[in-house]
Length: 448
Image (tube, rainbow, N blue to C red; front, side):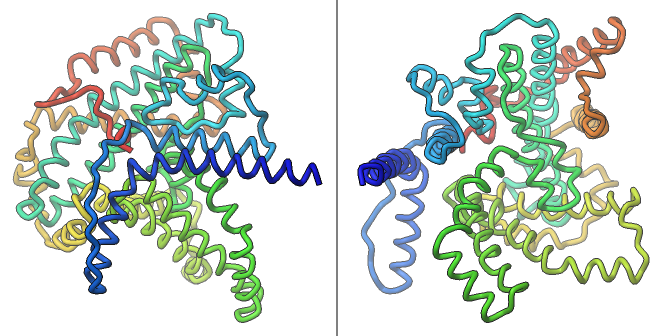
């Protein structure tokens, strides 16, 4: 009885701490959304709700360190990692400065291995870290800021810039967001690596993914694994979903019935992913439920797709087919990015409709040079994207061989290495884009 009471007490304490952590997040990020949604719903049903938004300013990165601390609490309660007895050690884990604003969302069991260990100076470790910081700055200052000019021009006046302009703006936004966020990760991980601390990777050439599921194993990796471990799997194991699964198997049969709770669990998972990005329907749809629809429909259509490839004798392992899969995935992801970047979900739908207009001549009449970048800046942006593509190809190739671009670079002769270093440094200094109102601290994901 004493053991049972002790376990109940532990659960109550855990629930209280979780409620405090998540309550603070809810207060700053989600309360206004639910007040607004409740007021709209009340009006629709003829029930006046006289509540106004409180418009609190959320601390930078609150979604990141909230998930990290919640993950730690759940890991300790499950016994998958030890509880940290020293408060300063825990504070260091929760507040380690490179991860604080934009992640990655680290796990205590992994980060603690190098966070608390005795540090020694290693030349290769420091140089690798500094190289990664430089690469992150290149992506942010040379690529992302240039793409932002085009994106802001088109999305700021989508009525004027319709048709293929919207496609151009969305593709530019895809690269803006990727180079902004992954660039921030390169800076954070490079800094921590130089200090002798290894954090979790957050990106792995996501635009080479051949399916939406694979894309999310390569994009914002730590968010995806966190959501699966602490939302998706616990939901599937809950009494409610077990009961739903039992009922579905009785009515639909074992094979079809077992998919019902899985698909419902995925809906919960992706709704949560969308809400994590922001308290607006454009995030819930564009970063959440739309991807849920992609994955579920892909699984449901997979048998028919396999039959078609068999009937038409399609070689699914050749390069051209893999390229088709990657382009198809990128196209689907870009539809979600329209919602992500647009001011609202309604505007995103209007933009998708407007994108159906045909104005292919914009690629030949010089119209693309009237989107905020002159010809030299536009050319620099294209060349920088080419460098990004080449390095990404090398990353994928060397990763498959158990190596890295930096590891291969370290094996080259000294003159070649320093040419590469100085080339990157001078590219940032000379070609780094500093537009009007530019703020070096203004990364997109720090607002989440």
